[in-house]
Length: 322
Image (cartoon, rainbow, N blue to C red; front, side, top):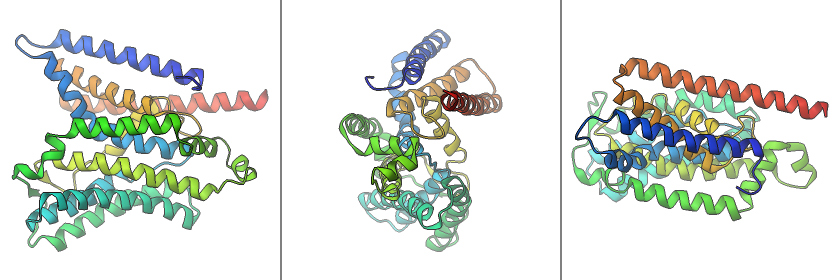
């Protein structure tokens, strides 16, 4: 944790301890005969889409930007995957189409932000609805008499999500941590998030740095999308991944990444995603109504984001006064 701001280190320690407490609560709430080891073994694969998307989102938010369209990107990727499955294309081709679609759309968002000169918040918020519509058009054109969903029964089309989710997550996590520790690009994202003017004065190409965040984030989005799409049995473009962007942003901000950019780390996104997941598991084992679960978790995410915004604004004012 060397080099991390003290508030961020405190946040990581809090989340680590919080996850341990939540695991203890789950262990106490488990009914007789239930396996705690299964709870632990499921955590990684279940959290993989959120964690991987969170890693991608972290890099983007570090620059001071954001991508609110990731749920729409998942929908388009799922639609292209469903069309390929319908036409009986080989599984590897279907996987590649799904992942490449996610990466291309995420990278395209970065280009749109640069070309239009409009804040990423506005561009990607519009993209959320736009991409959802594109997903419906793709399935309607690619699948004759499409009825709103497509069931994918063959096991070979579910292997990344059901057999290799943990392995994919482990590889991507190792890559992310090493890149953050030794790579120059993540440091430039932090620099851009802290001061665009300072980057310009240093002769850095800020547009290139911003694009690298979206393109690199697209790699993580692609891996997360592939797992998400291949874990489900039916492709429903209108409903798949609804609210996914809020969950991912909540995990990232909960992990200590400054929503305004310039501060954060990959480890925080991982701990934040597990914290939300274990909180949901505690509510499930406690017998809380599914509707109330959504209210509690959604409310918690909103409160965390609001508090984070307030704290960072206050800190920025104090720095300006000093």
